[in-house]
Length: 133
Image 1 (cartoon, rainbow, N blue to C red):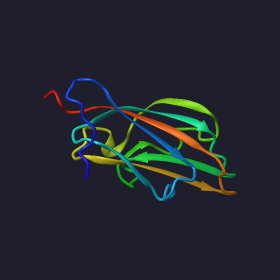
Image 2 (cartoon, one colour):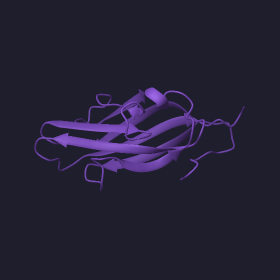
Image 3 (cartoon, rainbow, N blue to C red):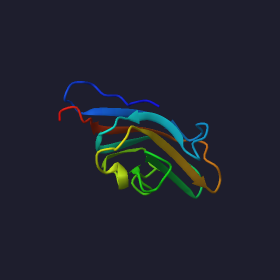
């Protein structure tokens, strides 16, 4: 387990994560970087660099666990079918306040209909660590 990235300076921190439609295990959730204990997520930006092109649905989720109650990016927050930047997505559930423990960021992409042949997203999670109290 990692403790998460934490600079000693009192500045806004971020995690930058790139995912592809065909990353191994993405349908069930892929563990990425870590958020430290006490981190307060300010918001998340998602840049769709190449559209996710499954025929029926394309759903990108970002959370701290594989649980719908701890979402950083929820279903419907991002249009996965258009090249665009979605800014300032607010977290929900346990991800809404200071984190009680270090948490690994999980990214999931699910699809229905004809399988996707493309899709990339860059996710930037801005947070403030608990280093000043």
